[in-house]
Length: 279
Length: 254
Image (cartoon, rainbow over all chains, first blue to last red; front, side, top):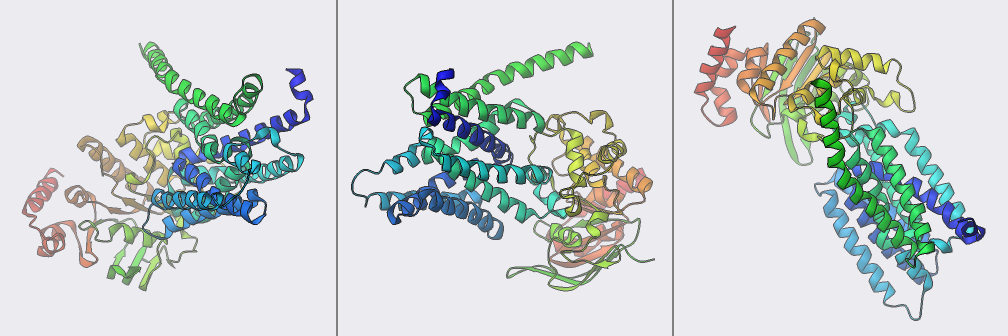
């Protein structure tokens, strides 16, 4: 194991995995509670249009992809709040548009674009020091904002109408959450790629939600799933011939399936204990 | 005595649609007022306007001595219980956590709420749910969840309580229990209560007065007068002879 981290690219990949695992699992907690899972999948695919624009124009594709991702997330929130179109309908349109634009632009490429494949399928081992700084800064800012507004975000996930009645700035908090999801998706793309990134912001929260009836437990389990999945997947890919992105998502999915299996066992045991105590 | 709510020719338009038109009424301190009307009559819109969540197009609406605006501060003096349809039933909160969400306001952002545990405990005691303080909210029955929501709307010790269909989706015993609890709290806390309901007989049995709207004001009066009025039939566009009989039976029981 120690020789593993003697490679600087592996060390950078590990730090990136920890940061992105932490960030995605924290956001995943809110994504699952607010039922935004489809939005996560939709935004990541919408970002393909922005990435393709970046590649064609020579601008950093992470930047153009981020603009697309954040723009799609915030526009979805705004249009669904302002109009009579549901979030899933709007994101369904963006999803298709982003993919179609991406495919149309990519089809004009001549030659081989390794950067495109990295962004489509992820390449955590190619993370540079500059990328790492970007991930660290974006993660720090988003995690700080989530920590500062945690109780308010939890309240709007539980009952928007009540939060609004209390005077909370519902639209601002909601749009902020959506923008954070868009940005997180884009900085996570380097790990697992556009195709798989939605898993990182859905599976950790879904695993926690399955296992805990209390948000504190759900939050901790979400973090554990995110970190185990991202770091464990990276290690798996070192020892077995599986691309890191796929290994991370496969490991997280295995943790979710495990949660699905052990939940009824835990519930039955708890019920048996309650009956025993009451008898 | 200054009314808790005073509405004068209130009109609310949402986009091109007039949802409420020329609504005038007063609610006096300590009164319990039922708002009735058919589906789409604007009952929830009226509650949301009282809370300052919807802009008034024309007319005047004064609540707790201040004209309602989207930015004014009297919301902290109003307790609100939205319809049950609007929340996630399996949300992972304890009962105490669910009640504590009622303490959050614009002024508590980035701040620790002082005495939150004590306030939550008091509110849960009021509704008889203190024993369930640490229970998962998702494991409660519909009736118990409704009592938790009532505790949440009382946690800031409001002067005015707005309830939107509090009995919807509950079975008859749970409805009865909730109504009894509401009556008891209203007397204990000297609350002014405005309750939207489709259950005309139950609301008529406990309200001091009923307001019947169907976009426009149809009736405002004592429950017996409203339920016997032909204008009620016009608002609902059907005959309600059985209501008068049911209401008389409720009155006789008292």
